[in-house]
Image (cartoon, rainbow, N blue to C red; front, side, top):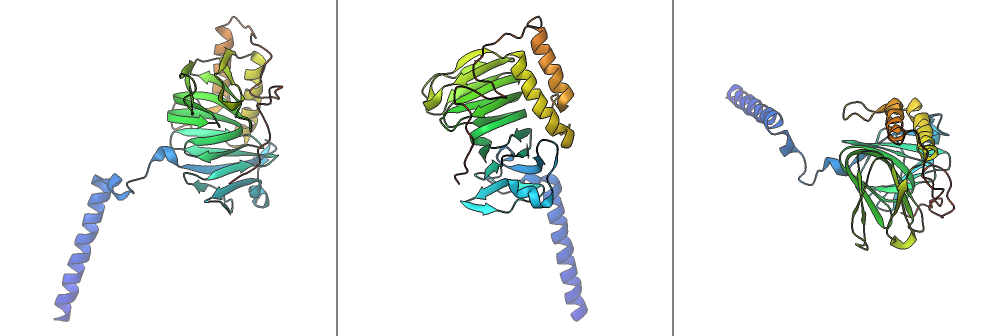
Length: 273
């Protein structure tokens, strides 16, 4: 009798294993929570100090993460959740991976995960899927592109496009959406004013390439999606932009997307979880 019970239990266990395997192989998505959305989570894959080296374990806290208003200990390859606030210190860069995007955050920047929202500071994004970087008043959305966004604490924003096109829209619906093409820069005034668009200068493009290059010498970019990977590709994009102008470095002397600005568009972020 005991042997029969053991045999029956073994059969039931075996059947349960088969059912589990069938679900995993034939309908893997069904095992994920209904609210799971790959565009709304990220991984903090690296903290880079001074743009030159990976952070030591005791330096990881130079990138801080708040979750639900509470500070969470920064860990290597840390999983980030929607709503998490990521803040970089004065000497720290943060490298974030989404399913189809990479975001590099410069020092003294902060933003919330999902995609990257309420950015104050500066971030460079490479996208191979729908994604947006939002400042206080402006949404810079794209589907396959490379672009830079700077957001000021006063609500000013600067967006520069390196590949493809970016759709700029007002989060308060204060002005009609605008397409920003490759090689263009838009300055959005404080308090949600409409964008002022011009051609990005060679200096601005090169400044961005320089700091992205430093980070990617420390943390190699992913190569499993899209064509825009690595510093060499960014250099090629810049070359194509300038080549289309006959090598001109045209552009005004307004807000620079990589250096300082007399417009007040960049103010050091103070974490406010």
